[in-house]
Length: 507
Image (tube, rainbow, N blue to C red):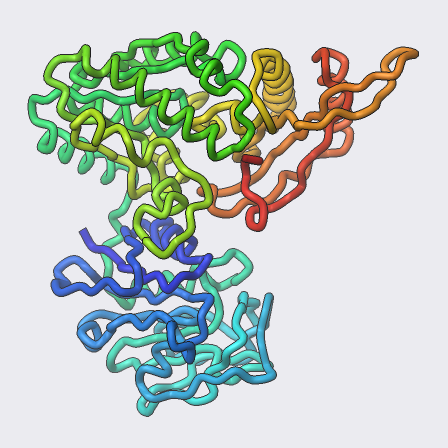
């Protein structure tokens, strides 16, 4: 299968590049800038991402592109373009002219294949303080803005291209067209589709697993559900699902999830273990410590159940690309934002081989695969739910009373979203029980009760997110419903933070 390789120089937008390439039905992978490739049998092009560094910094990323030149097309984006310019003898300097935000292309070379069928006057998104002031010999300028003459350049004969703007962000109106033109230059076959992925993955699972048994921890979420469905289609009842009630699930979730899995034919066993989790979480306040305790407890219980199954050689997980990225699993220089319980621990403890059929997929791709597999839409379109459950939506210590309050609030919130046809317009919605109380008036008496924060965001893969713009009357009605029906709550607020700088979850 044809693929595009993205060499990551540390840009916050690198994953967006990958998504846009895949949305064009072309497979791509992200590697650190230091990665080098010897064989080009299936690699059709290289993209160099942006970076927080200046190309003139001593510690700046320096991809070795020497053995790609003249063999496969190369596209540099922002820092990547500056790096290419400097690599071939051009000049990149910090000038008084910086470009941040939307800029209008005032010139586009109509003869450039990169700008095929694209004209001037389009808005693109810039984010750079360094400027390319001269391009290498044999290169030519292919686009400009009013402020920067060299907004893009190319060497057609060697199929090397660079653009100062970010075609991967939605603010760049022509971004998809530029990336599509680059893919055409790479002469790729546009065959990365859900049906292709499903067929190949099922074949790979059959070949990999053979006659072995596989165990998987299920959560009811789209990731583990799609992973289990794929494996089930490959090996049937030799897949053993384990669904653990941590006591931190939503209202009635344990029974509903078990029923859903049986409905789609997955072999699953439910384990009630809420008392163990809650006792170990008693008086724990730190969110990272909560995650670690829940992860360890999950492993202990899962290990005990998995050992009861004969001939198990594989542990399956619903790990997806953002899990890997945020856990810094493929980049030793990255900082861990938060630990993910499904990226390690169990395979070593159980002495099992790891099976992660969705590891290279973004969330939107997982949903597309789920739809192609004909999984019921209420499962495929279910909002993401964190592995640690409500523990990371209760700020401070965990108690049974707090869990019950949050479960009732969450139930009202989700039902109102569905009743008002808002649920499927939102990527993720949830409630958070804060660690503070506020003064209120209920009836003729002063109250001093809990505060609930509501969160609703839209995103594609969870890497970036924007708050959902609810009608004010909906929020007012929702707050009134929560306060009137949930004892112990007298105030409701709405979180309008974006990611970044905030995360989607509060802990």
